[in-house]
Length: 610
Image (tube, rainbow, N blue to C red; front, side, top):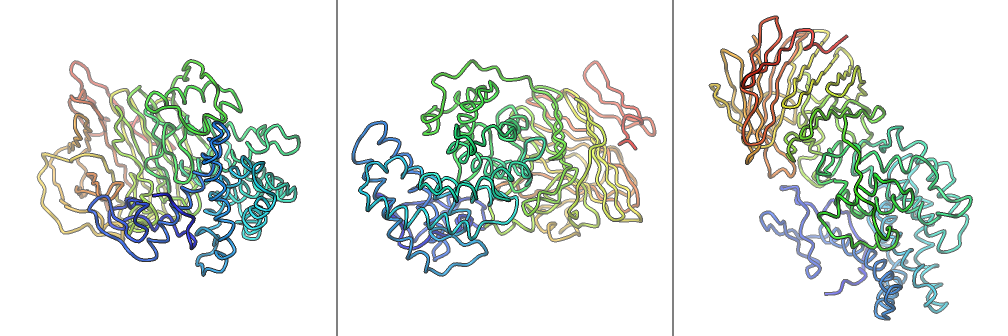
């Protein structure tokens, strides 16, 4: 079935998410009024879902127009040019009608749900028009320009988001692109050089370490693609070329610096869990290798070529952007050596003590609307296993988005009195190749966390200092099934804020000696040792992962005190553990035992610092 230009505008992508399972519904081009969850085949009907289905139609048609226009240029088959012409004229005919359709929301589009969607949708249409414009009769060309492209740009000018924001990057990209292909220099000036134009977005939106200010890897790619679209349209044009702005190549380096060895990225803040430098990185934009095809074409940096070489070991090099901009031959893979790195403006301290172990401490700015209250949270990767990842977001249509994914409890950090942390900005106290110390404070509360990493294990020291006695919860989630030999009894729930309702199969564990817990997932495992602490309650159970149909095992340690220090030793492993035991020595530190050796940690080494 060939998709047709919709009779009515598209809806909100995030409405096409199963609210229970947190997965995208199956897009079936043959069923515009019936939509099914891929998990349990549940059927969803109604205008909300039908409108979201039309979001996919608009997206597919815009992308198809660009690809077919390129194919026509390459092969000359008239059928491709005619299909592109039909899509453009179809939207031009309906665009006036779309204006009269009732819309909700603060940033309504015309053909689409929001001005953000309108921008993403209109750019490939403008590119497609520019590629076939020479073949169109003057009357048809005028109709596409005057009834579709220019009205879309002028709507975005009127509605442009008034801030440094991913919305504004996209508004600018669409306005500038349409200005270029229609000869409207005023639109170009507005989008590139105005107070909130692309130059301002680069100056004020890209942090000094190269990441976008919203603190999400997928929103980073989302914003960078809009900027790249502007850069491509005006490259080599004196006065409008923005490719010389050093923030652009830096923004393309930053995800490579943050990526795990398998290319996946930490899903910080409202980030899609699948985000990777080797594949899909965000909805509405091409896969990440297309970013690096353009990056290598613009800057010739061998690091970008190495990323492409890594990506194309798994997938073919067959995208339209590789065809349009890619180098004929990629140079040999000269990937730089991996090392620990701190991104100070974003507040990400990444430890890489061994080839198969990576740890991330998150301490920086909140990230605005897309930020999460997760200061001093810890995430980790080992042997290709995201053993304790940041969950990011499963989509904004998921029922538990606000009560779980955007709550402190879903992250590996500390809560006070069972409530999420307030918006805060932490700081780095010290950093080297094997350890990091981070801190944050708010009214009456000071938190400090030190991670000391070795090749086979890492030591976690978390200090909480409150103005008076408070309920202090240390929470840790790990992939796989959780087991322990410590006695346990089931409890109905753990008292706390709204997020605690998502902790299931809860048991309280008691131990007369240091406690050992273990998670297993296939051949991969995690061992955790914790000292016996007077007055501490220890709870275990399962918590939602991403998607929420998957569960992790959690451990929660609760103390009611003014000041306390949580110490834990973690050992991720493949097949067989190398760490045999951990011995906690009263007032004398601890010993990590291997077969034939023991690492001693003194009390001074287990402090968080000043």
